[in-house]
Length: 282
Image (tube, rainbow, N blue to C red):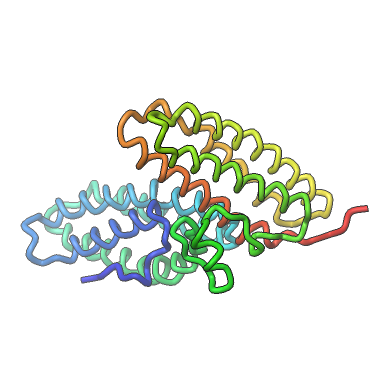
């Protein structure tokens, strides 16, 4: 049986969820004590793999787009190969009978194990690991500062372009303002005020991304298109936040939301914006 060890984790819950399910599916099909017939196993495995390919691959590609991971195109090509192979297997399953089901199942097992070692273990483990600032996993030089205030804009976030650094600092401040409202014990329902802060965050984020993209365009930065895609996805996520849909567990939801915003911003600065060259414009 195959175990999903800590070395296999990417660190993104939405990505790891589907990869864990892949391991569970593989173990299911390998299990000898199952009462399911080979044909039943085949149909279940195909359904599980279709969900893994359609949802899991999208989560991976979205995450790699957001973190401007340079292996994105490699992942996309391998995902397409997997999906095409799965479609071929699916088309062949329709003609399988009891006598041939075991052989087809063995073929699927070989296909899954090959993918496990050639992609999940060797490729997925190289996906950029998230920098979880909200959990205060700080480096030694910043641990004292960040342990007291995880929302602090510290020197490690500086990219060296003054207006970009100033705008990043303001984004941290806006998220901190939302956090302060969240922890104001005198407010019973915090949604209206946090909604206003999130509105400000959305508008300022759009301004910042436009300024940043204009700068990257002016210096002919080759990573501009990757940055634009990441920016667009982040803006879309903020626009899709609807606090009116949350009636219960407000504090839990808002805490998760603020952690997401902070983690995304920190990850994006450290893994994408830090790569932007510092050029003195005339």
